[in-house]
Length: 179
Image 1 (cartoon, rainbow, N blue to C red):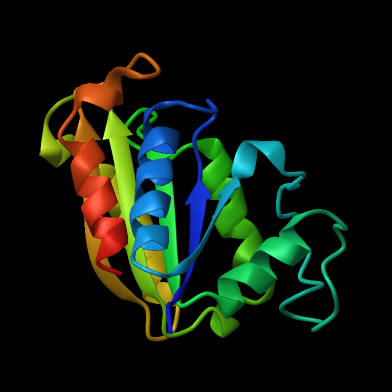
Image 2: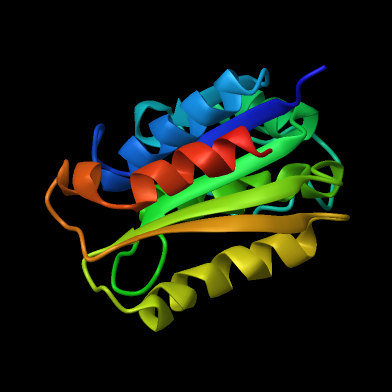
């Protein structure tokens, strides 16, 4: 039986470089017999966390009634979570950060996940992309039992579609296939 693979695309551009790598990962995961789904975060209604404490201190439902409720459910039910983002000033995209912040309501339930990451950047130095990974590692450290299983780097790309001739395309497919 295959795994449930949830891919969270934090690209602001549909068909952008990190989003394209998400599609390759999804294809590989599906070809290996897994149940794979991609959520394009930009298309979802996700409001900013207000740090009001309603969810974590009062143990009540979030004051926001948006798409995050369903996304958190999918994160909890997934076996594998893939988080993808382009580098923006050596950090993850705002779309991805807002999503991460909103998991505070139930982050302790997002447990025992195999975690994969997809990072793209205009800069072709891996050390620069590692700055983005530090944010993901900080988040992953808060998720009980989360294990980093792999990172696909698409470096030295900027214009949408540039990734299509990059070795990261095959790497994303093979990584997806190996989950």
